[in-house]
Image: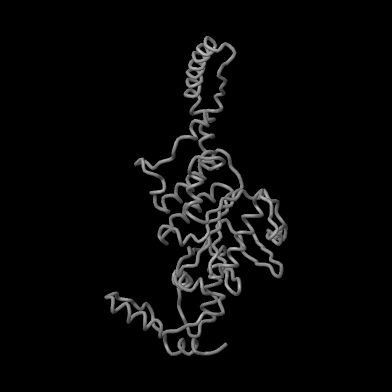
Length: 331
């Protein structure tokens, strides 16, 4: 799908896939895009300073309704903790309510109803004897109020805040899956600056979890990141990578990118798909940034300083004269 996010003076055009990655270092643009999505797909009113965001979202050239997506947004770890703990309108509370209503707890709920009836009957007998006009009233539906007073802890009975950000994200996604299984909806998950939460190897695992969820349910996910080398690239997700810098650039399919490299490279090059992906990962956040300067002397300095720290910085490739001339030439 084509996503357009309008400002007062221009439109940001993006590819919106089931999994979309927003790369690049123009944080202001990225924040505006994500804030616009969160606001549009919510029930909250626009404040006076947010007036420019009203109806500023288009999907395939049409303004979607504000209930088109149910959005779960994560900006900090605190947002995850809120959703996986018990409280008003949290994901965990919604899941617990589903469990209480499920057939698997039917016998236990019936036993609980009998026991509760007996307890309140005896309590009301005592009240009537003492006060005559008073009695206790209850509803089994209020059982959830009792459960809400309990606490969510880890399997080692520690506070969930002691869990790593990676573990918390996994719990959040497992919770989403369980709820979607019972009550499927069209949802959008926004995780802003995920590179500030988890290491890249952990991100690869989270990405695959999301892929599995998207294959099963009507789930869409947007990640934003800016750390060098931090992006998940394969044949399937490549067109969902949008680089947000001075220019907004969406990666084409891998075969087109590979063909571009082979045809435009300053000298003959035989390159594999995997090598193209490795090269893209190393430069992804700098594409479209007019302020980027290439300085090989900086790499020399880096190797010198790392050498003084007894760190061996490996040079994975060297440039031939044609490549050096190309880098030195002006467009």
